[in-house]
Amino acid sequence: MGGERQMVTRGFTGRPRRTEGPVPPGQFVTSDFPVLTAGPTQHVPARAWELVVTDGITEKTYAWASLHDLGVVDLTTDIHCVTHWSKLGTTWQGVPVATVLEDAGVADEPYALVSSYGGYTTNVPVEDLVDRDAMVAVGYEGGPIPAEHGGPVRLLVPHLYLWKSAKWLRGIRVMPEDELGFWENAGYHHRGDPFLEQRYYGD
Image (spheres, rainbow, N blue to C red):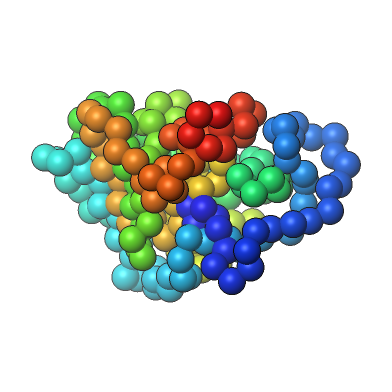
């Protein structure tokens, strides 16, 4: 979904492990990083990657270098997939989404639709993009993000289920009205808070 659903293996199963960390209900901790996508892995060279940020009127395009010019920071955080696994203490490098939106000069709107190379989309409240640790991630564990995990650049919204953290990030469009993305149109929750178990619409 976000890409976090696998095309070949139907579903993900694993052995629950004990942990002392803050794990949302219904989740188990894994040391692995399962590869789960809503479609085929996209292979986008960093030199060709672009991010378009828009509100429908104002628009700004970032390339690899111009994104890095905004200032890359480190973030250590837990991540949680709707397929019930959590991975604790992952370390990412990236630019806070709040910094990107401010630099782009887009309107102050309540909703965002995030899009990926390959056509994936997901909706995220702008509040979740700017008031927490959300970042436009360019690195994982001190190195490049592997393509299967969304590299060269992915969205990371660690306090929501990973389908909201769109892989192969291509666009962020802020808007006054909510617009559902790929998994939300298929019945998944519009927000996806792991600690509230917001997996499906109505949860």
